[in-house]
Image 1 (cartoon, rainbow, N blue to C red):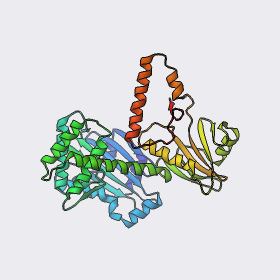
Image 2 (cartoon, rainbow, N blue to C red):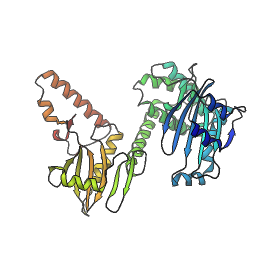
Image 3 (cartoon, helix red, strand yellow):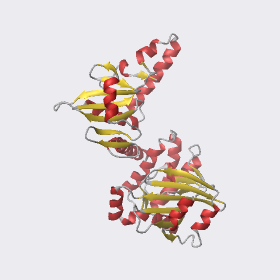
Image 4 (tube, rainbow, N blue to C red):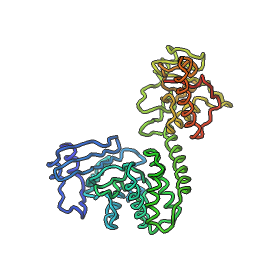
Amino acid sequence: METLLRELTGFRITKSPLFPEFSLDRMFDDIINCKVIKDNNRRQVLFLQTPDGGFYLKRSVLIREKDRLRHLLLPRRRWAEWRNLHRLQNSQIAAARPVMKGENIGVQPKIFFLLTEKVNGTLLKFDSFIDARKLGQYIALLHSRGVYHADLHPGNIILKPNNQPCLIDVQEVFLLPWLPSWLRIYNLGKLFFHLSYHSDSEKWREELLSGYNQGCRALVTTSKLIKTSDCHKQRYYRSRGKRCFKNSTGFVIVKSNELRGYKRRNFIWGAQELRQALEKGKVLKPGRTITYNSVWIKIHHRKFIFPDRCFASWKKSRALEVRDISTPRSLGYFKMDGKSFFLSEYLVDSMLLDDYLSSFTDEQQKRRALKELALWLKKVHDCNIWQQDFKSSSIGIV
């Protein structure tokens, strides 16, 4: 904490009119608990507990070239959340209260922080229809006042003790003169998409829509929201699926004289480890697949007129992962010495579907296993996934 305080002391500080007497030094003197909520090389979020209440400190570092370029071309985006919090307060919309902001001067890389007051309450619960209706009324209030939240999901909403919903993250909020009907449906459809991951209760979503329609003149139908929610789902799948082809929190691009490709950020293999695996690995199919140190390696001899099968495996493995379809965890895709390689986890303790079903002697147990298989297959088909080479030898049981 002393290191953080010394770092922030040299910042150019701006206090919010809501807290004109607030002192950063006094807050650090009174801290009784500090908890790290998020921590990576670009952003850190801390929860600071004091006797007078709690605060969230968001600290951002511009270490990436594209981040520095974005802040150079769009300087107003740096303090977008600061301005949005004040504008929501002026509009009497329940949201977190800003306390202080600051940025370093003449230091590289540039660092800036935002301090907000903790909102007392709990995350959304999906067992209360009253909360669902109040949330719908709150979203209707936002839309009626021209507030569009581009990142609207349950994690950004807190229920106060009086069951009043409150926004806590407004970085992606835009205040417009008015919201057309299609934009309101698009925004509400995104919330419905995220709700599907938290609750399967159709009644809960119906109550939310009922509360929303109470505060809007133009009624929104369930069919429109389901259609828009499906569009958000496909967009989510595409954006998450493409992360395996770029530097991100989970993946990294590999570029060297010997090796090129992609891999998971926590996977330490390089050219030397791959060559060692090719020399000492256990051959499963000659010239096609091997295993080494719990890693399954698929080999493809690259030719100009034939598609890269390993690249297709890397892409489709990530697509199945974001759809929550069980498959061995992909580890990397490499190109080396005129060949391509797809690496994934090797499930040592797994067995093929035929062997698994043959192990049952009781008819009822086999029926239950087949029912679980049918439910899994339904989940695959509900995601519009078609396996051209679908057979029992392609399915493993862990």
